[in-house]
Length: 306
Image (cartoon, rainbow, N blue to C red; front, side):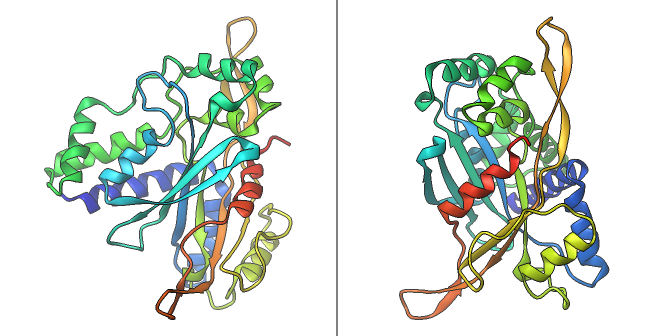
């Protein structure tokens, strides 16, 4: 089976996992489909640490290597100096219907020493959840080779399992301490490689009564979905965004007495994106496909613990 079939299987598994944790996303999908529309996700976001993470590659490479092997290519770079973050987005080379991938990394070495060391200590012994067999299969796919049906199904499941927390449960005190400097770091200690968020592509939802992001958000609020106040981006601009509030989870941690405990913390929100047209060098317009740093900065805050 082909690269595209493995990718389709992985994306479906990630979406099913995410919907199981973020009920707002499942509710949005039901609302759209009940009105004759269709679900299409604009992008998927992930968070990483740019430091030694044991056997797993550091930073964006840990996630990007999977999508690069499945037909994606790196596009634009984004810097968030005040949050110590660097990010890139990736687009599929041949099929624009596949969601874009947005991967950020926390520049751990730029943090204050005590915060930096607390993160390093927690993640230093992480295994690489991709086996040698998985990596070999991905290498074959990246070269355009096909896999047998049984290998394909197993690989998609193994790749989906990678998107979880690879290191041991962090200490409760570490998460709370790190959160004072970087809520991004606290989130990533708790959730690791998990999907940070999916994003509805409003332009493609095809619901007659919801022609834009404003009407969609109004309908979601009316259905009882807790939504972000306001919008990122102006009306009719090249990118306008909103989101639900983050779903909360009881995350595994280690308490001061060394026993397993739970810490109630934010997991993920469901984002919405409406894209506008921009002129190209040939004078023709096309839909904007990138991201805007200031807007992304504000959306990062949607996982801040309230």
